[in-house]
Image (cartoon, rainbow, N blue to C red; front, side, top):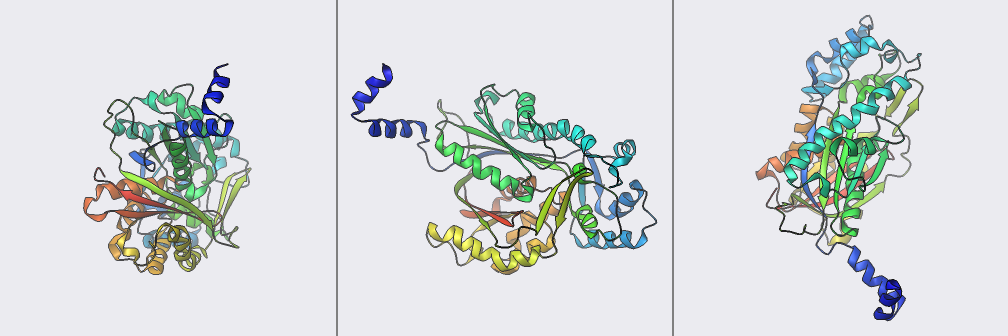
Length: 400
């Protein structure tokens, strides 16, 4: 009866539905990043020591040529240290993790089932503390990882660890690789702008234990991932319209627009998948060249319709996923960026390595710390499997 009365008062079903839609959507500007939190495991390995460490714990010190190759890659990486959930003690307790001929996926997933949500909770707790609002005000949760495959997933476990409401609406994203944070933030932006009063917690966490294995002759991909990848988690709180009651929320970055482009004929350039011995990732040596040749056109396609933002890219600040030094070099070359534009990305790479998706959240955190190195509009650039290029136009607010 109430619904029929509303329909009659509205005059027509179409008018009533439009009114309902307006009531549901946020009435403020674009969604904003309201807080950022990051976390890493306690175990840290210096990069200059990593080659000795890796070949010792895998009992492969006799592979001297591969060890020398890893040492050279580590030296050129620009990385100073990385953090890992796995320790020597854990690897000694699971010798099947070191040899690809032994099935080990079950044991790896048993570990990540609890370790991934715990690491994500550490980052999320820091974001929530910075946000300054009750955890029960979170309405939506978006979680992303390639370090597990469970049902119910890391989203439900994280919600329990944080004490979120039982009515929180969750989304679980699996195996989005290095673009996972930008993908999750794009989803969060859409949720916040289409649900009045929504506060979305985004959490990305990765543990390289899922793909750790010993070196093998003829498998350069294993050596490359061992030289670059690390463990970490990043969390962001996203909202659009202002919270009622005069909340002291402080937007850090307005999320102006988000798009995704896939470079044609590149589906094998950053491929991966689960096997009996864990997750296999196959990085491509073609990736830096592909990014150099295509990144500007992806940006023109994404930003051009917004009002002629293409042109002098140095007028913007840049949050670029630091997949490795070659990726950053090629982005810098293609866009003719001044050296300081990618310093936040290079700094994060040097201190943590490539943590896959969470790395970009670390870069955003670093940008807001460098008060003199961002102003006005900027671009967040995620690069992941596909090859997918995720672009988000950001506006740095005074609170940042």
